[in-house]
Length: 399
Image 1 (cartoon, rainbow, N blue to C red):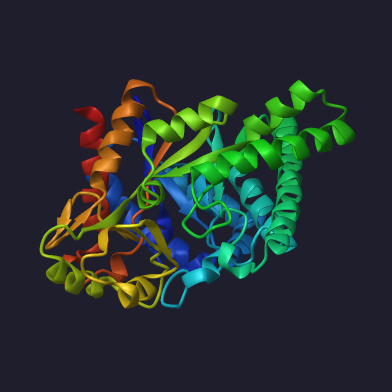
Image 2: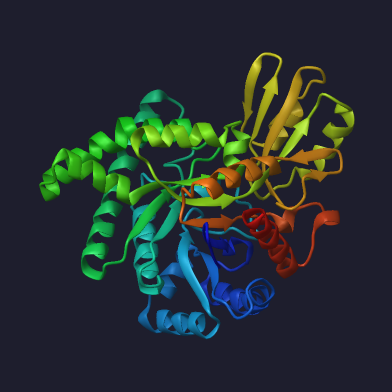
């Protein structure tokens, strides 16, 4: 839906379906009810998630025509696509495979270009759009600095071929779209410090040289082009897990002029071990599940400690040494505590308060996708759960 502070939407990665027919069926079953609850009589924004298989099917002209007709009939519009998970995201083990294929591969490049081609066909007129994507690769796959350096170089050059695609689409159709890179714990771009450093030290110099050679752009024109097409996907959950503050993030971006393509409104688990630590340790065990990665950043007596997944943190836990955990587990936004555990809901409150004063992104996308793996006592029907999430964010924006 359209608000004074940008488009408010939710990501359809909560709905199952890696094939287009399956995902479209889930949308048809859920969207009319959700739209009626949230914006009866008004247009409704949807953040579309398309797996690779679904994108191959949807790009066919007859399928796109069918989908566009359905969008119009149901007063639904799309400005953003989630292009992070390439393959299976439901009823399967995802873990670090969510980064597969990474930005060193032609599969990731072609998938992302395909998503932009699809978005260009369904994006409303006079509206900018974007596709989110992983933070280059998964850091723990690369065991040496040389391997990591090589991965960054290849990924950066591949991302510039997507810039070519976006330049071509904008020239031919006038549609303006951008790639939204999403830092995530244990990505090569783990947080916004990594993202800004990569942008300044790798993307800009490589990109300026590339655009000069290919298009004859001046240095200023090359920099302007990259800043236009490559933006940050600001996931509030991920920033909170990294103990980042929104003011610091925005100041880092402003130093270079990097834009935010979308704000992903999401909340993580927080465990404060300063009181009743044994009860809280037992409580967090309930969130150890086998589908998604739940990286942990721990504040300890000796500083920060990083764990690639919750089981490693649980195994290493020693009472009295751990002060606080931030756990990458997308929990419902409208709840600030889960029994003995807390959430990083306050990070959402702070971020959106800044956004209300000076809007810094055109789209806010609710991204709570872990409903199916939450403990049973906090699971609710999916339609009602989404409505509750969206209403909570809408109220926060309006107050």
